[in-house]
Image (tube, rainbow, N blue to C red):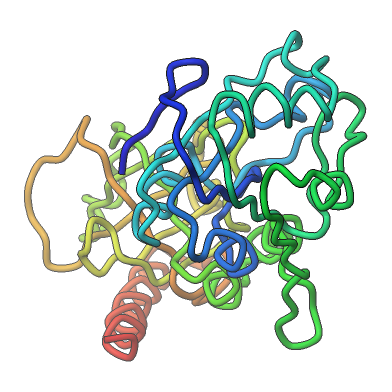
Length: 291
């Protein structure tokens, strides 16, 4: 998939899906379907127009691009969203970008998509522009709930990653370079690869999760390690099952599949070790059941 940033884009006839697409969830996938090009914004517009009120994101730009490429999108066009850009009117967005820069002949959006200064543009404005054909996709419901990025964020914060994955259409993923930890896992017989949470991005609620880490089954603890004194704060600790090697500094992609239990303090270290062994068994069973 080709990634381009405005204004460095070639004008041509395009079938264009437009949106923020944080998470690239099932609803977003309906909007993207049958389009060769996706237009999105980076950073998230609320970080510019309402700093302090922006959501914790589900996906990095790199993860978003990866998911869109997996849907068969040929080109991802990015609006570098700035304070100056936020002052563009909805009509100028249509004139200068949708038609002028991109040459769109078909435009797809979700029914709640808003654009332009003060979010004045909506689906009706698109429908009344006869320079292109507009497709407005209704909000998607699953089990009586609207599929939305905000709903999925709440599920992940609550640890319900299994259901969140279903609404996302792919595992929720947290990725980053492996950092040095306190090496207690190694001493306990369960060495871990540790990730620091990214500022501005959602992290699952404290607990132990069955995951895949770079494709390897991994029992992952998200939390503050209540059994031990530490000043590190929140950490994602992945025990890659039956894997040996040095991956410090390398990128680790952790796909969250299922919450196994909450994080808690155990009566003794031996009790903790016994529980960690059960976590490994439960992780292997979860991964096996998904294959």
